Image 1 (cartoon, helix red, strand yellow):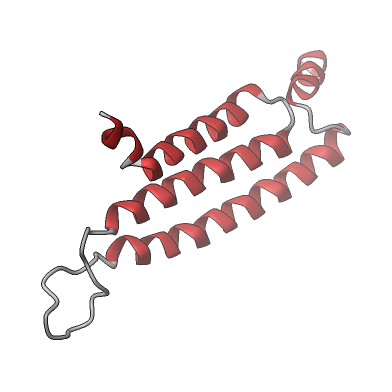
Image 2 (image 1 turned 30 degrees about the vertical axis):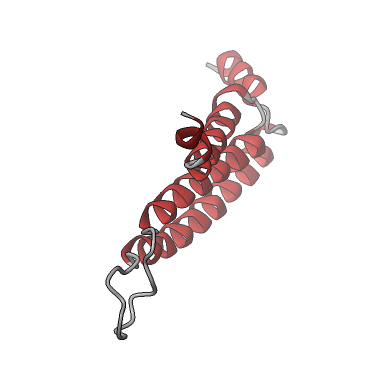
Length: 120
């Protein structure tokens, strides 16, 4: 039982990061904190996929004598694409937050919703 818990510590870290990121996205009212939570959640997903690519006793996927097991390089390459998409998403989200701040004078979600209710 201990080996099950301690042997998969990287997955427990992924779960903890996902929960922190999800909590920040759901519970926080500040839009910047929501974006930070989204980035933490994305980082947990990247860690999860890269952790799954490692094979016990595996080597780099280079042809050489005596190598029977190879690590899977595909998740690493896919996560590079995911990192680029994550950076782009963050940039767009921050640009939208700047526009929201210029329009409403705040980045607190509850205050923005109150202003919208008063206008409509």
